[in-house]
Image (cartoon, rainbow, N blue to C red; front, side):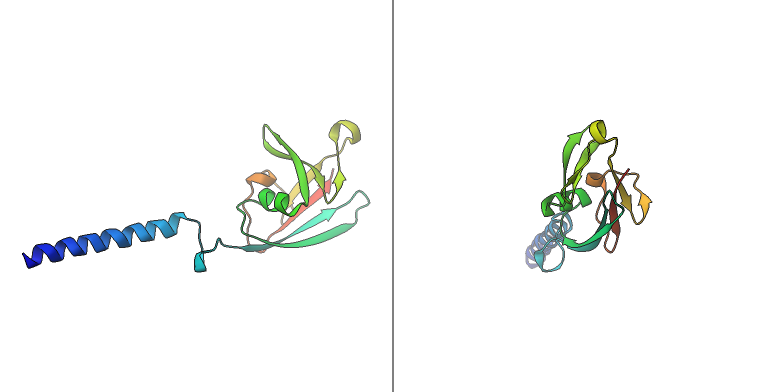
Amino acid sequence: MKHSSMRKLLALLGSFVLIAALALTFCGCGRNGKAETKAFQVVVTDLNGQETTFHYTSDKESVGEALLAEGLIQGEQGDYGLYVKTVNGLTLDWEKDGKYWAFYIDGEYAATGVDQTPITEGSTYGFKPE
């Protein structure tokens, strides 16, 4: 009877440890129970070619989500994700200006949209009128 009770207790304890481990894995929490924050920078080039650099730390998943929350960008949802129309207060309209905000990741033209790009610690993201 002792062995049976002990086995049940160990099975229950093992189940608890497994559930706790899975909860920590899937909650998106880092140490201290908080979401992981990542530092990154954004370089915005204006119509005159002048660059302004912004430094951010965010616990958001995507660059777009973080920059929307910070108020640096605004846009509209389209077929391919967020279409950025305004960066740092400057609005570009392809229909009126023939220009749009190009999105860059570490100096390279991005292959993903701003809202589909996960934040990478230490990366530099950019917006340039093209």
